[in-house]
Length: 355
Ligand code: TXA
Ligand code: MG
Image 1: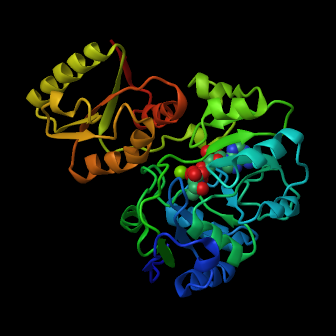
Image 2: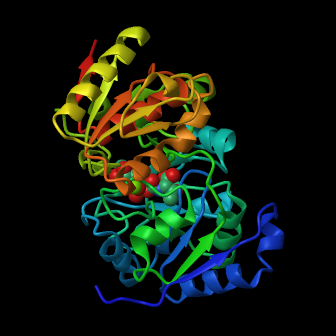
Image 3: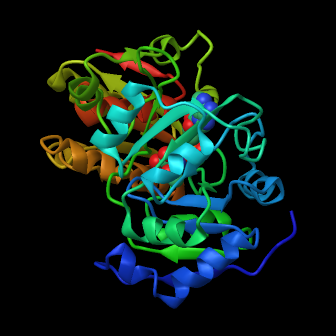
């Protein structure tokens, strides 16, 4: 793809969407979207790489910039709940309930579309994934753009999702028009994706909204078979790719805490003797229990949200430090840790050691 002039603009923190809509950089970014350009912007989960969702040409540039396979559909982002009825053809009761409970916020709903979104957004499916983010910069941008914005995470395909503007710049400078920098994102893992086309909602991708919270809101949520068994065909097309991957070989160690720590120490020492550059992904509680080339405490075990927030930054740091072998502590698969574990399994390409 041809290189383009990229601009990186900081947006002040702490402003409401209405105030942000008067800021020059946000106005120019919305104009750029309307003219078919590519704008990276912060959401409460990760940065997105946006293009106007009604233009096939604009959307095609997202796939080119990311190196993303074209059979992996995109999420459309709206700045107003009322917009939903312009693009989806049906809103089942359960979907309405989820909208009222979690929007704006890190929840994406898969619904039947009306055929007025560019075909490459949905990869030819008869459903579209929609979400209304809560980040003030995202809301201001979307409200000014007026139309839905298709936006995958703003990373090169296969790299960890970006939680800071610098991550976006590292991956996509020269491939986008404008990067709106709103600081660190917050949630740290992507939105939860739920298919609400049937009677019972089906979880396709765990994320910022927990299964427990979804269940409290609607009574019952099915877990897609693709999340349970690696071998079955996942229903969320994006789940079949090796995602969130660090460049190093990665192993996840799971089991009783003391055994996990002991096994990581043993495997790490062994790998270092074999000349590998070893990284250990741990938590603040355990960081001083390890010696390796690079030890990264990713949040606190006692504060699961902090682990989610720091995860992708940690994976990127291993890459930047040239680590070629990573050992990671597993987490109990509850609450936001369930989403963290989903990403860790992918990063490890399914390689888990149980002790
Ligand atoms: O938090 C997020 O969701 C971020 C921010 C930027 O909003 N976006 C994001 O987009 O993570 P992306 O493209 O990296 O992931 C979109 C996921 C993929 O797993 C994709 O397969 C799934 O949503 N998806 C999109 N459309 C779908 C559809 N019609 N049916 C089922 N899954 C769909
Ligand atoms: Mg992504």
